[in-house]
Length: 342
Ligand SMILES: Nc1ncnc2c1ncn2[C@@H]1O[C@H](COP(=O)(O)OP(=O)(O)OP(=O)(O)O)[C@@H](O)[C@H]1O
Ligand SMILES: [Mg+2]
Image (tube, rainbow, N blue to C red; front, side):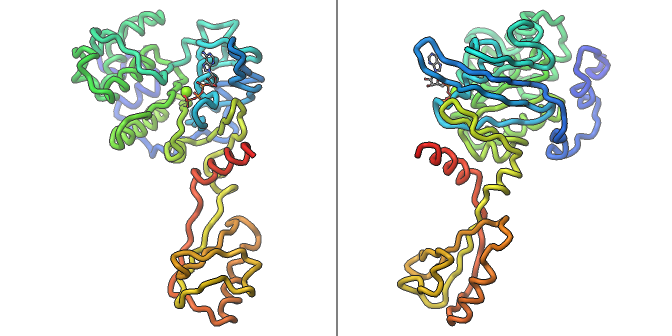
């Protein structure tokens, strides 16, 4: 029996194994009005120690999206994920996961959810295939060798399936964690810091893997403090800081909305100070007076660039070259988080 014939396999996975062409990973992001697959309402958490890890959070995750939860250490990312996965009890609020309340309908909700926790936990003497198959059974799913094979092949673990976990490298162990999380065919996958401490190449692999999973119909929520990770993969980004969800935005809108551009003019003649006639542009001199920087809002009606260049021409200040750079998500993130500290 081919994998695609098996009714147990989620249709998207089956389609893929049937050799249907995969469209570009970017093309499949969720439409703006897609219904929520996870609905978080007023969820807060104060631990027994008195630490308020989460202030009331309201958030809808759209079906089929990759949502990145970005925030510094201790921001509350793991707490939020742990609540949705039923590991931590919320102090207040409700969460509906793919139609099931995580408190009153726990088992059904948990069935929909796969979790790759931040901490690697593997049973050293188990084999890759045994641990994955066992977990599937634990969730009450009937055995399905084809599905397990598909998952392990997707994660390039198939060749290693009979190896003991203790003999695997860190990166492979991480992939085993993903295989375990997918063993019961969840529709929602949480990845808590999927690439913490992995090398550049493996990070790339992991990113590609996550994109493939999304193309297979799985909704992905990941936490990270790597801004480039969010920038690379996410459809939407939530920024969490000190237990507060301070921003949720479509990634591209976020970059566009908050993005500042910087214009650098490479001067023909170096300057010691910015001429008073150019004071209104708030320029700064760099590279020992050889470069003049102007930071502006790229989306403003008037950027001030044409008038600056005109005024410079009037003053006889020549430049050899110019270039512009757009601020990255990193700049945005740093400014958001530091604004809050003030
Ligand atoms: N079991 C616990 N008991 C008491 N306090 C906790 C517990 N777990 C987390 N905290 C506290 O709650 C806050 C949020 O922690 P959390 O692990 O959710 O942060 P995080 O955003 O995942 O951080 P990191 O990026 O370091 O993983 C921190 O102040 C942390 O010390
Ligand atoms: Mg964490």
